[in-house]
Length: 256
Image 1 (cartoon, one colour):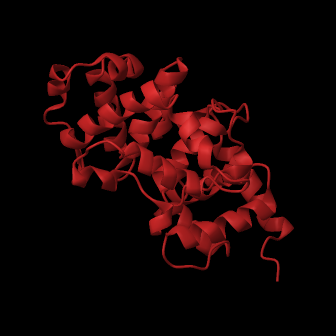
Image 2: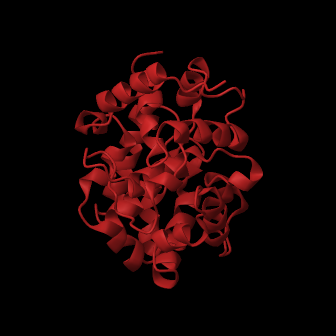
């Protein structure tokens, strides 16, 4: 039986319209990269704030802004031109389990990627398949941690090949790739298509998806993401992750 009924699609399309607009930005981590105009600043700030985007949203925004301030509100310039002494300014920075040790490596790795790999976009584009960015996320993690690094730091980037839904990286990719003129997502990366993206699956979107019959698996893991992606593509194969706005908005703002 097809679970995607016309009524369900109409309802979710209405919720997308309700939440996929400029008002959404104010209380969301995407507000941090919206502070910038330069492509590289948007990428780097987006990647870093997505990395710490778990837990209390107020604290995510507070620490995201703090991080940008510590980088002189010029993240690309800081990444490319920092000295080891400059890293001292991050002493004491912490968001949950992400601390200055992790941040120092992230800065080091980002500089390596921009100097040697052409930036973040080519790394993700290299292994994206026709219908999925999940192999690309695993490849990106491998490349990101190809330099000597603290063992503890690798946990801060998820790996779909190890069963993770990789919510934060999928959210970051949504920001970079989708370009629907509504002003939330940036659409900076032309080498990937919205049709290849996966929904940022978290506790909120997962719970709503189960209530609507879009998801049967109980864990929020890579298999659940595959199931959810399939059903979202049934509603819109060109832009399935637009429904992230509906699922997340219903869960967080309407306690659906």
